[in-house]
Length: 139
Image (cartoon, rainbow, N blue to C red; front, side, top):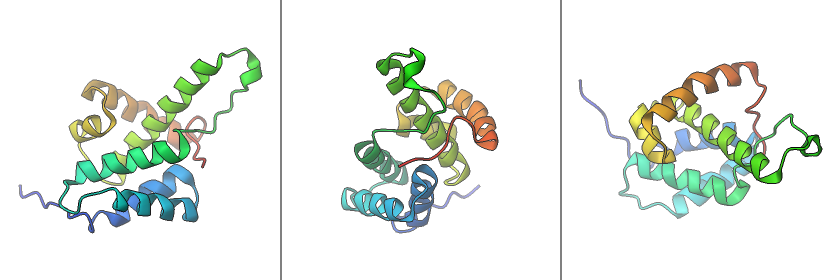
């Protein structure tokens, strides 16, 4: 099977779609695309460009996710921050798989987690996104 390599400009639609699904805002999506391409070498492989997008997202939004959990419910702030980061990475994993069509190993390389973790996140993340309970987009 022949694999077609995308150029950085070919990925711009995928990056915008990822940004929109992560933020839910056109303006925020445009800013993330601009940030990504300002910080990307035009000869970089597609996984590096998406890793740059993830870095821009983390810098801009700190991996915030809208959770239906109240901090006053007795949950420590450190735990809440970990859950927010976890939910953002799960959502990004699902979007990278579904929108960009990346393989599990490529997603693991971008996110910096083992392939088995990514597979587990994809399984549960797809279910959670369908139910729209835990992984709502915020910006």
